[in-house]
Amino acid sequence: MKRVAGWLAVVVGALALTAALAFQFMPAVQDRVFAAGARQQLARESQLPTTDDALRVLLCGTSSPLPLRQSAKACTLVIAGGQLFIVDIGPEASENLALWRVPTPKVTAVFITHFHSDHIGELGELNMQGWAQGRTRPLDVYGPAGLAEVVAGFNAAYSFDRQYRHAHHNHGKGLLPLAAGVMIAHPADFVQPGDIPSGRTQIVYSAGGVVVTAIETDHRPVSPAFSYRFDYKGRSVVITGDTVFNAGLARAAKGADVLVSEAQVHHLQNIMAREAGAIGQTTLASVLKDTSRYHINPVEAARLANQAGVRELVYTHIAPPLVFGFLKTPWLRGVSAERPEGVTIGRDGMLITVPLDGSAVRFDQLEG
Image 1: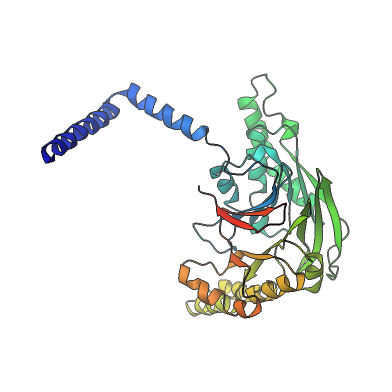
Image 2: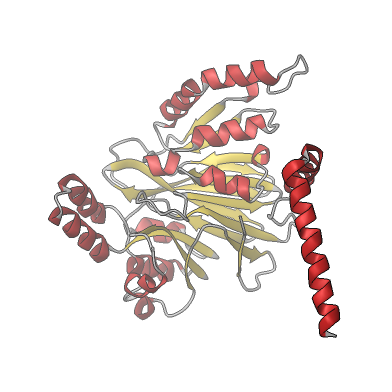
């Protein structure tokens, strides 16, 4: 038996060596291997479920502006009734969507919470990718006052790119139509810059059974800033964007199944500020310290979830970044006393499924 196993090992080794040499020195073999791999990759289907039995949320970016290699900036995808909606699209998020084979040409609309760069940095890229992959209509973008200027800026910045790609790829067949390569802004006018936040709400989208409500929230000095509530067939999710704790948001989130809330641990952020100052990085130290004034902390987010009566609280926009797993302990300090269960720290690729029949919320993980 040992002799047979030994001969088999020799034969397998010889075949592997032959295959390696053939690939190394035979272009035809190289091309066939590449073609097989390319087809396999291109044929990969989206990891998003397509059945209309749930309201689903995919976290496509969960980090704060501080860099974290394994995590993109703010981005949340909502799937309901065959429609795809994106809330914020920060740097690196469009790469995540591509790796998971999310069909960006099918994105129905983008909802912007506010205009900090980590929430809008890849708006132009998302728009271009969807158009270059076959979208045949402009991309609708919703957000607070000021949105028209922001969208116009991205449209202008990508104007040469659109012309180049159209010239490269049109081939006289109407591919990549220029009229479809732009974004259309739909600013909500019920809140104006400088208004004192009072928790006002307005339905900004309603189609195919999906109702999206913009919620005025408090991220001052950023004004206005929104959270969004998505309702579909009796199920609902609220995505906070950046905010401090406020009663208006608790009222608007009442009864939601899932609250996806940003959170920053202020005492850890302040430690980072102190250490930055100690090594002479004074500007960074000042910025880090300032952020505690306009972000909710995990305990406050838990209190918000309790007041709203939501089933599940999911943290996103994680600050400071959880570069090591054991940092979850100080990051979650005090949360269990406020909310003993129904709390999850989000991560890129987390898929949250809210069944339409009201059964338990499920958590899965997409792979890149």
